[in-house]
Length: 325
Image 1 (cartoon, helix red, strand yellow):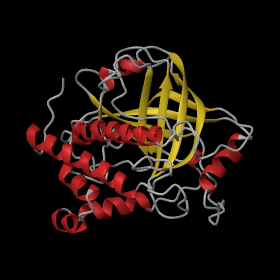
Image 2 (spheres, one colour):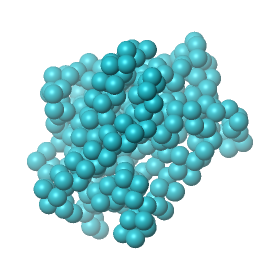
Image 3 (cartoon, helix red, strand yellow):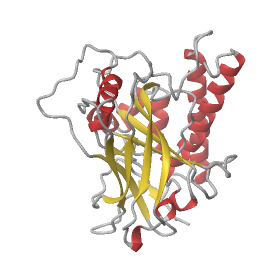
């Protein structure tokens, strides 16, 4: 389908994927406290899981009618906002990467995630910075294993990219733009990145209660108690001029316009949404259609790591009698 320019051979890449996956599970086992519920390795803290409607637009040009977007449609969705922090009780005011995971329900068509080919779910994962902080799979391995000396020696640019993403001020997760960061297929011969663009931004004069450890979740609930909120879901097609934009190095910013293809509308709520809601949901970018499958080493790492992490924590919680609690 795609001939991507890998910076390692397939055998070398798979070796890195295996080592990264093993390191993540080993870290999970080391940090897990007996009697406590096992949680996600990354984006552990939730700012709430909310119900929404994902509407594919009915007036798309033919070039954008691909996969999920081939025809108009409405899908129920579950959306989890998150914080890149490893602790679920971390202060929201601390610098961090903010994420969003979107699960569409009732999507027909075979899925790419091994073992879930017949799933009717489709997932999108995004963060609040346009680029990914690890240019190479070697950099990701150093980050996962905590080899900061290796990062500083091999590619100190990674630290700057992480700092740039983490220092973005987020006043409310409903007033923030999100990006897939890494590329995906868009049909048989094109690549794209996804974006979720906020329809409204926080006023410049507004200041959230930074002393509230969970101000992002509380702020989102406060807004949704008053009104629905709609985002624009868009695709950014890979550009070939003045040179072909990289599929493998997602630290490089793409330059194409964001082309709207759908809308994501959050439903109103009438109560406080707890952080624990949606904890047992699994999100994986490979739970998607062939036409929109992930590309690049980053996508292939996520396929293995996310599946292994979900399997480990689910089994731990089942053994401890904490599944569903």
